[in-house]
Length: 211
Image (cartoon, rainbow, N blue to C red; front, side, top):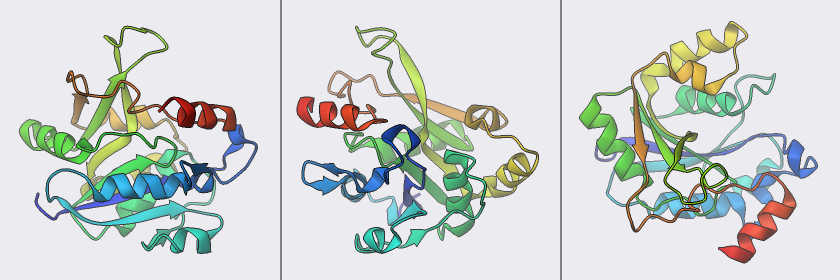
């Protein structure tokens, strides 16, 4: 899979829990969240990444200034992260697409390598990260899937198109139709906050303070 993956930052949401602001443009350590997500994509371990893009629907010039293509949703009814997935699968120039959300600025620097290794070993259609569920289990021993941290084959485009056209919206239900490799990030060196995301401005400030 060397050089066969396009990384996509998902920044096309409506930011409803942040008061309607454009989440990807909110500052974190002096840079917009989406810029942090891009930086971490470009510093991924291994040589599988061939390029990056951003999925956004507002303030397009601000995203274009980050130096990568900006892809707007190919569907108009805002079906959540699946809109970004479908947009990426339709426009992706490589055989595989890696998605990361714009609101989790601490995600692992070896995310792509570990997802790709699992996808190849299990001959899966897509690979998902699973991070510690600190809310349910403060010890970090319990993990839950993080479906927006996903490496997938572009061959899933037609399946997702049909799923959305049928009026379905739940991301995990669509994924369950395919061969999924679930990858726990539970190594001793893994940051338990790696998949922490900011849904509100207060959570963003707390994440910035505690990171």
